[in-house]
Image (cartoon, rainbow, N blue to C red; front, side):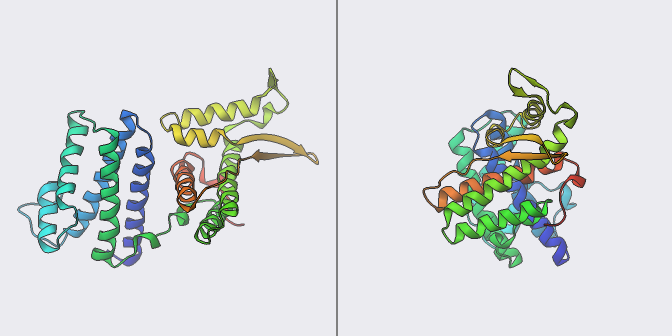
Length: 277
C-alpha cells in the first residue's frame, strides 16, 4: 500500500473508531451495538492489512478473525491479545445472537481498542496515531480552521478561547446546514411566536439525528434563523460558549463537536461547504 493510501486508510480507521467512541457515550442498546461493531471492525481491518503477506490455508478474505489475530500475534505479541479475542466473541454474540453487552463492558472494550490502535499504528506502520488529524477531513475550510485554532488553544491551556472557537465551529456547521435544511421562502412566517424557517430546520435535524441523542442535544443548543440585511437574505446563529474546568473537559467537548461535524457533513451537498477562508 502506497504511503498516501496507507495514511488515508489509517485516518479512516481512526474516524470509524471515533464514531464508536461517540456511540459509547449513549447507553441505549442500539448505540452499544454500534460501538462494538465499530471497534471490532477497525481491529479486524488493521489485522487483515498486517496479514496480507502471511500464508493461510485459503484466501485471506475467507479466514476468520481468530485465525488472523493468532498468526499476527505469533509474529509480534499484541498487547491485550486475549481481550481482543474476547471482543470478537462479544461482537459475534451482539450481531448474530442479539446479546448486547452492558454499558461498562462496552466502554471497557472501547478503551482496549483505542490502546490497540495507538500501539499498532506505531509498531506496524511507524505512524503516531495522534498525528493523524481528523480535522483535515472537515469539508468546510473556515470550520476546519476554527477547530484547529480551538485545538491549539486547548494545548496552550487557554480554555476560554478554545471554547469560543470550537462552539463557533459547530455554530457555523449548523447555520451552513440550516440554509439547506430550511426554506427562505418561509421567512416572516411564524406560529405562536415560533419562527417557521427555524422550525423546519430543527425538525430536519431531529430526523437526521434521531438515533444520536448527544449530537442532537448539542445542535439544538444553537439558535439559527434567517435575517434580511441591506436587502440581502443571510443566516445568523447564536451559540453557547461554556466554561471548562480543565483540559480533559475541553477535550471531551472538542471530540464530541469534531465527531458531529465529521459524521453529519455528508448529509449536506458538498457544494454547500466553503473551500476557502
